[in-house]
Image 1: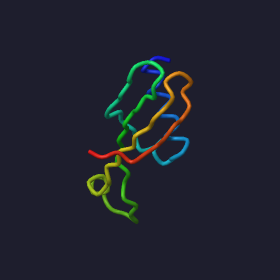
Image 2: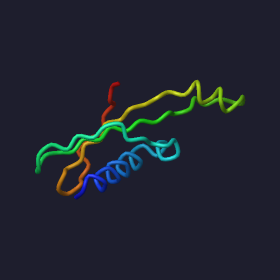
Image 3: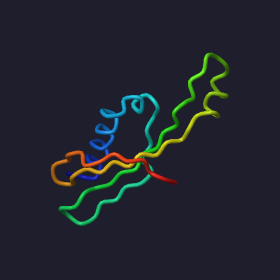
Image 4: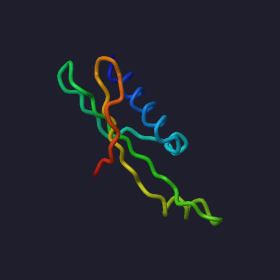
Length: 88
């Protein structure tokens, strides 16, 4: 598996568990690919808007929360190992 394939697979795992992240625009923040046979770790960020009953979209973006999620996958088979909150 290439790193690019790993990033896409990690993104797919994250969205399958947390579907709201699909529409929020995930961005890759970090990746860690240790020696062969180890797990790969990818950190994604997104801004989840605060739900409101109206108002300007700019105000909603400014009130949004930036969320970081760390996704670990098996580097050989691509199996999901974990999804955790990540810190800045």
